[in-house]
Every structure is written in C-alpha cells, then in structure tokens.
Image (cartoon, rainbow, N blue to C red; front, top):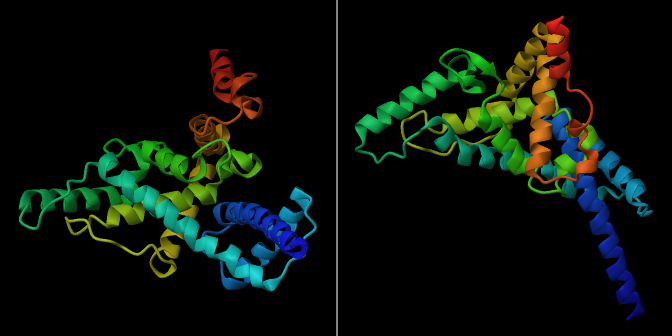
Length: 263
C-alpha cells in the first residue's frame, strides 16, 4: 500500500507538471507560431516540461513519452479558438440560419460573407467606413472565451506573455474568425476544417498585415495600445486579482498623449 501511495503521489505530481507545461506550451503557439512544424513542437514541449518542473519545484525528469501529451495542444488551442469564433460570428455579423428554400436569406448570407472577407473588412469596427481596424468586438469575445475564462486561466497566469496580447496571437484569432465566416459562404452554414493546409497561409497574411499596421502607426504605438486594451479587458472579464492590474495606476498613454496635444 505504501508503494501504491507513492505511485499516486508521483501521478499527482506528474499531472501538476503536465498541466502547467501545457499552459507554457500554449504561450509559444500563441506568441511565436500557430502552425509549428514537428521539430519545433517537440522542442517547445521539452522546454515547457523542464520549465514547469522548475517553476513548481517538482524535480521530475523529462521523458519523450510526454511529448504527444503536450504537443496535441497546438491542435487543441486552434480548435478551441475556432469554436469560440464560430459561436460568436453568427450574432456579431448578422448571419441568418437559413433553410434550403430560404432563397432570400441564403443570398443575404452569401453577400454578407463575401463583403466581410473582401480586404478583411471583418477586422474593422465599422467595415463601411474602414474605422477601428482590429477593434471589432468579436476579437475580444473570442479571446475572453479562450484565454480569460476566470482568474486561473492562461491569460492571467501568464500575464508576462499575454499583456499586451501577442501580435501573432491576434493573427491566430483573426484567422479563426476568417474561417468561421467562410462557413457561411455558401449561404447556409456548413463546417469548414480549420487545418494547416487551408489556413497557415491565411494566418501568415494576417501576421504580415498586423506587422505593417504596427509599422505604419509606430509613432503613436496604436497596435500596442489595442493589444494592451485587449489584455486589460480580458483580465477584467476573468475577474483577475487587482494587484496585478497596472491599468489602475499612473497616467495612461492616451491621457499622456492628450495632455501633450493640449500644449
């Protein structure tokens, strides 16, 4: 029975390290590359396990059998984002769940999907006037559901990575929304696989667009402000502890900008 208890203790310790390693691994997928190759996945998994063991002060050695238990979360995170995007898209963009004989609604949905996907209009707060790029509410809704479900969730736990929200993470969220809109392209909802073949190039395009937007607005750090606001709203949604909530103290950059402009 002593041996059984020891095995139980080991299993519990291994589970703690694994759970923490998974959250560390997901920070890499979010902030570095949403579609990593197999070698990168293995490297990240190994590093995440070692880091988790150190942070939790549980001296458990890494074993290669652990790799697939961690690397499957590349796919898991992408499908979680796709699920969140799918459930938000219908209401956010006004798609109408049509029956096969609802010709009017089918045509409406087709036109709506085409308009939203043209020049990534879906990423604007107001697609008709090109205002509020990367400030449309659905981005926040998807991020809240995946990263900020509660005070113990990844966005709060790894605040050093998720505030400001990473550019490549934002690109992945946009790619998930893109895919969820494409599910309405025929006029009726139909499942579209959110896989590497179909979406790694679209993800790369969003990364490039975000990079050039950041460069063009670098003087006012517009993208950094948008990404910081995403994290702060996420933390508020998760009811994160206030002591880490730097937004409450000091003068915000916007206030500072207004003060400077007033001169």
